[in-house]
Image (cartoon, rainbow, N blue to C red; front, side):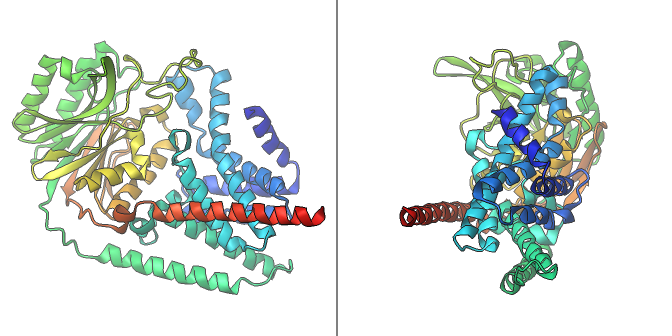
Length: 523
């Protein structure tokens, strides 16, 4: 099935529609880090829209699939590095897994193109249908089959701060909708100028112009708004140990790992800090089972008179079965362990193997312990009078998890991750780009400690105040102002995306009814 779908997309390249769809795919890929040419997202769909002209719904699906396959083949090229170098999976297996994910994500491009074309054939304008169904498809893929919110069009704009402030109203989906609508309007304007017989999109142009003006006005207003939260700021130190992935879990390197984090922490905390953050699985052993090492961490926290937060695997009994968790601990300045947060959204094949009874030839990437189980509750960790919402690695791409933590009282989001799996690829930059939206959506600053980078401090407006490079040993310090925990998105969540999904279902139903009526007349 994978090969048939992929080969079908390749065959599309042989004709004009396929070339145009592929061009859109390349432009979409280039708009993401790296190289991060974000302006290309605003014109990337124009070749695709030309390819969709006069197409049947079936042809539209194939054209959309071709666009998606090319886009995600470039965006996710690093997946093979992860699978082969760290998963020790042969290329003969890695490539089909990579193509499966590429085709799965491209499927939503195909469905969007097909539904938009079906809407056009019954008289609904593309300026309405394509943005709506595109957002609906993005929303659907965020939940289906464990969900994958990676590289939505809106994420490409993470550095254009005035534009993306509306994420606190409609999430990243609002920015995606604007981008798709702008593409449709520009396409129609270009085709009108070229004499293709398409009328000038005057109404649509006015709508997108007004929406962009309102978006930019709102964005600058939010960026210039005074902070009225009143919460006391505190200093944080984020430690980047740069521990090589291939030795990270080796018992022989345990002492080296702890020494590295202790040395960097003492250097970073010389001026005094309130919170020190180490990355995901900074301690590559069960903290709860190592009293000697636990005492060492407690002593460090007392020495610095600081809270110390770090990643370590954990285990507990659930229903009579030993359960393993990817966890984060918080130790107080008194040296007491005051809380633990467990990762709730696990990485398929990274922390557990789906259908492990069938896929017996595949091992998960995280070595040394059995399959992880998800955490059960989003419970913030409390530091003095500030609650911390913990996002472990992959979790930061899911907006609903950050929203749960902030609604539960968190006023600072802490993302701990180990991006060593990605090597020197685009993936760490793509991961960071997505994380910035969690801060804006919840109006909550986000601090990010990564084993090999990128470690960063992101304010509640999504501005990256400081960041490290990749594969360097170091740290970042800064003052954090706890967020207000107030935004429309926190109240309504993904209601705008749900609305798009409902409208898409209605468009599909209306199309089916129209086709049935046409078939009845024919007969």
